[in-house]
Structure formats: C-alpha cells, structure tokens
Length: 248
Ligand SMILES: Nc1ncnc2c1ncn2[C@@H]1O[C@H](COP(=O)(O)OP(=O)(O)O)[C@@H](O)[C@H]1O
Ligand SMILES: [Mg+2]
Image 1 (cartoon, rainbow, N blue to C red):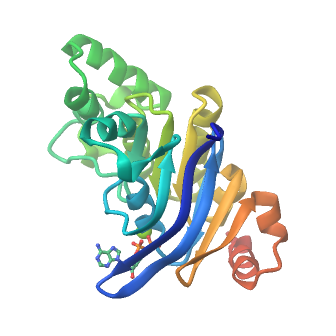
Image 2 (image 1 turned 180 degrees about the vertical axis):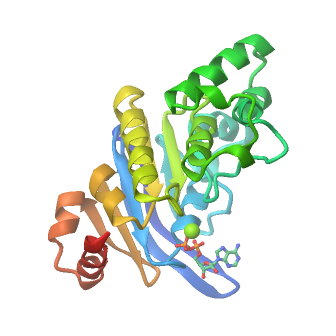
C-alpha cells in the first residue's frame, strides 16, 4: 500500500439510465496536495466526487480512499472513513433557518458527544480561521457571497478532516472573494496539512492552488499530472481550456 496515495480511482465506469458518464477513469490523488478535477459542464466531475464519497454504488472499477477499498467497508468502517473527509457541496449547503454557528456545529453534534461549550469553542475557532469570528449568531442570508462560502468551508473542516473535497467552491464569486477563498484553501493545505480535492473551472484559481490536475472530457480522464505539465500539454482540450481562461 502506497501511503502517499490518498485516493486511487481505477477503471471507474459509471452509467446513468444507459448513458455512460465515466468510462474507465483512473487517477490518483496524493497526500498534502491540492488536486483539481477539471472538465466542461456535464463531464462527470460531481459524479467522481460522489463516487469517492460512497454516495453512488460502484458498479465497475475500484476506488481506494486512504488505502481502503471503499466497496468492501461495512457501515461502521464507512462512517469512520468519512469522518476523515470534509465536504464542501456545490452551493455551500448551509441551512437557512440555522445561524452560522449552528450550521458549523452540525457535524460535531451529529458525530461526537462533546459538551455544548466545547462545541461552541471549536466552532468559534473554525470561524476565526476563515475570518468570520463575528458571524456566529448571524443567519446565512445575512452573509455576502464570499462570507457564505467561507462559512461553508468552516463547516467542512469543523471535524479536522484529513481530506477536504470541494465541488466548485468559488462559483459565483467576484475575483477578490475568489482569491481570498483560494488563499484559505492554501492555508488549510499548509497549516493543517490537509489534502484537498477540488472541482473548479476557474483558471485563475487553478493557477493559484493546483498541484495536480485531472481533466475529464467525453467520459474519459484525458490528462492526469502536475499543473506545470498540464500547462505544457499539447492536448487540444487542455490548450483551449487554459487559453480561454487567460482573460480572467
Ligand atoms: N443521479 C443521476 N441520474 C442520472 N443522470 C445523472 C445523475 N447524476 C449525474 N447525471 C448525469 O451525468 C452527467 C455528469 O454529471 P455531473 O457529474 O453532475 O457533471 P459535472 O459536475 O461535470 O457538471 C450529466 O449528464 C448528468 O446529467
Ligand atoms: Mg458538478
């Protein structure tokens, strides 16, 4: 077992209603790195994350997460594994009827028996990590777009996961808010040694944060490698993608 590989996807094929979304997709993600999953809309990026998270059954292929074949885990092993993974869903997924503090506290309330005061301390600490210490009692609707995303990030990391999975965390943000979200992601990698898998199509973000790039196109992973190799690739979809983003 190669401990450096935090995720190994091998020969993953996914069909929905007879339509192939992923065919024979293989790639690895490594400990301590930011791995970006790229591809056009509908190319299967969210599907890959859902498969890694065990939300869809695996019909063909294999996924190892932190050295464990996820299709062989029983329920308690699954729970244990997924507690090590934080998730940032596509729209942030905060519950509008709960305060920011209550939202961030949710995973701790669901998965631990910690007393209320300790949970409050942890939540406040995580909120200050994303520069939102003053929003504890606010509601999600009272936050700006960038603050909302950072609150969602605080919730994703509240359990101190070893790995963070983010689905288009920067979508809809202005360039300044996007850059500060990226900086937070880099902080998590550096300060908390988190391994991060992130779906994004913002070229400016990719250039700032990616160590490794996986490119999905026409159901296949057509590229897997370092950011600098991705930028040097002669494959047309990659050239087009990075050219298109130059004006960003
Ligand atoms: N649960 C599902 N049932 C049927 N089709 C799905 C399901 N999930 C995703 N798809 C289809 O799979 C394709 C890839 O979707 P998705 O992974 O969400 O793409 P991306 O995140 O790259 O935009 C799309 O054509 C989508 O309609
Ligand atoms: Mg998606």
